[in-house]
Amino acid sequence: MHLDALPDSARTGDGPMDLNAVRGVSRAISDAHLFVYLVPETAEEAAELGVADRGPAYLAFRSASMGAVPWQVTLAAFYNFSPRAVRAMAGVWDVAPPERWQAARFSAVGRAMRRVGVHVTDDHLAEARALIDPVVAGADYAGKVLAAANASVALPADPLVALWQQITVAREWRGDAHLVVLADNGLGPCDCLVLHTATGSLPAALARATRQWDDEEWSAATARLVARGWLDSHGVITDAGTAARERIEVETDEHCAALWAPIGNAGARRLASLIAPITNAFTAAGTFQAVRGQSDLT
Image 1 (tube, rainbow, N blue to C red):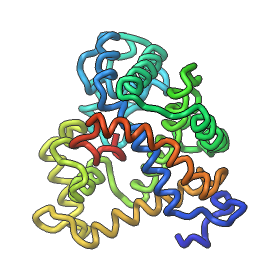
Image 2 (spheres, rainbow, N blue to C red):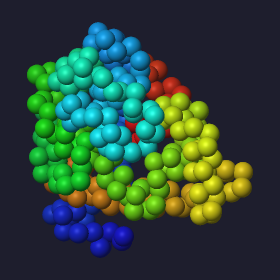
Image 3 (cartoon, rainbow, N blue to C red):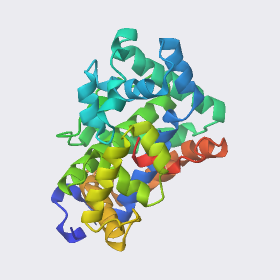
């Protein structure tokens, strides 16, 4: 889609959203959200609730905003996980109800931010909220299951954690939009993982360990991508595959243009800069080492 063809909902008073601004703020949002899956505080909070296994804990924390849904609903919302991976969360709501998981998630976020020394001045925090709040309030949540669920969660009292939760809504909104684009391009749950790992931005071992697709399923997905010309016979991404993956990202950006239209290009770029201290602090603490490619898959 050419920028001039973007719908009115993706336009601001200054004209259509710049997809570079959309991509930039989307990356900043994803980066500022990511640490919750990697910090020890999250595992500690899960253990306090009675779940020591990282897999079920991750699934419970991330899906808690949806309520006590069966694992099959989480599977549908998360898309690129295998059924065997998500089935492992069965029983987590018996250990603790979703509201306790959500509260524990906020506790982990606050503790981790304090540990690494995230510092956002009061003025910058207020400015960031003034930008992201109308985005969250004005978003169209049709078909955006995880984003809508997170938007329904009451914001915590801690101002920095409350900002992180608003960031989470925007992050999950893009993720929900991305799933629509993947499906529209005929990329199933395992196929999209195989293609992503082929780019080299996500280790295949990490993807397979967390999403738990077996050898037969992984090989079948690889064969489908080879048949499309997106991978060669050795599983190496082709020029056509690289172009296809970038097209999928652009189509996702086009979906997200309407999300950021309430604050326009300047607002999107300013928000990205205001939340950068979150990512910078966790980067300095070494939190993201060896897992940077995971940001758009978690």
